[in-house]
Image (cartoon, rainbow, N blue to C red; front, side, top):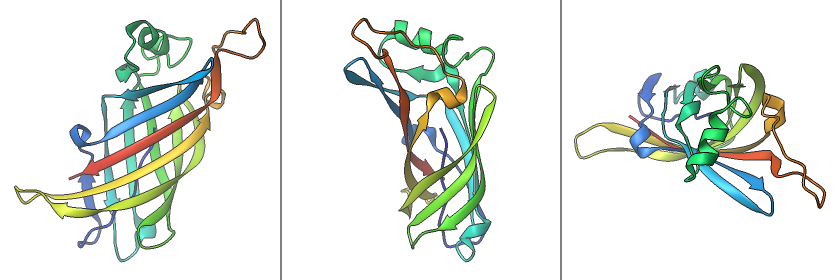
Length: 182
């Protein structure tokens, strides 16, 4: 859940995230293996000043109800109050508070990640993948980031104890974003 910084030729250019060419995914341990999923409804804007990247910012929102793990029963459970409580807490949000350059194509994007109305500061290690004009002359930019959070920090507490010890669902969730914006 969360997002990105940008680099372009024009100062303070704002880009809208292109959800059709972007992906918000996650991985979490389940029993012995891992479950992978994604969110299909998200939006956001990225502003970047290439001459002063520290003045850049990003705002990103994900619709909790758009979770998809290729299993309808599991998706319904994840939307329930046991996990995301999608009816009560319809959005997961990230808003940047600082962008720190870490080289020509890398940034640490610090910001506020909100899930279930619980907000915590996170740092996203963002890689700028480049910019290009599409065949219709629209300028595009792309970024990637990945972070691991503890789901319990955001009120996603449900679990089931196993007879052999341990729990059904892992606490650590790996979140990954591949973003293209226009």
